[in-house]
Length: 216
Image (cartoon, rainbow, N blue to C red; front, side, top):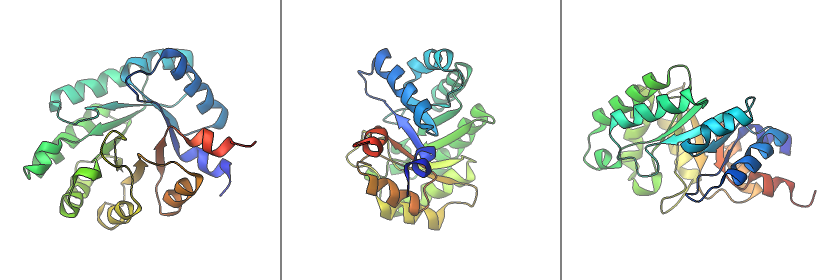
C-alpha cells in the first residue's frame, strides 16, 4: 500500500494538553501537504486553525477524554466547535453509564449529539480498553441506533489503544452505515496497513507523517 493510498484515511492528530499554537500550525501544514483526511485538534484551536487554513478539514473532540460530561455539555461543545469551523466531532461515551448497563441512555446521548452535529460527521469513541466483549457489542448497537457516522476504538489516553480483534468485532455488529476509526497505539506503517486492510475508514494517529516519510 503506497503513501497516497494511506494519507486520505488519516486523521492527523495532536491532542496533548500542552499542544502549542506553533505545533498546531505545523500539524495543519503537514495535513495540507500530505492531504490527510483531517486534522484532529483541541477545541480551543479550532477557530484559529479554520481561520488560518480555511481549506482544511478540521476534527475536534468532545467529552474528552473521560466521557462523563453531561449530554447538554457535549451537545454545546459540538455546536460551538462547528460554529468555530469544525466539520467532524469525535465524542467519548459515558463509560459509567456503560458499566451501569444504561445502554438506552448511551444511545439517546449519541442521538442527541448527532442532532447537534447536523450534517457534520459524528464519531463515537467507546474506549475499548475498559470494556468487556458484551459491552463492546452493546455499544456497536448504540452507535448504530443513535445514528452516528463512525465508531472509534480509543481516545489514545486510556490504558490501551486500537486492537485488530476489536475491529473485527465491530464489523460483525455495527450497522451498514457505520464506519470504523482505529486510534491509539498505531505506531508503524504495518499497523496502518493492517487496520486499513481490515476495513477501517479512518485512523487517528500523530505518527503517520513521520512513519510514511522517514527516509524520503
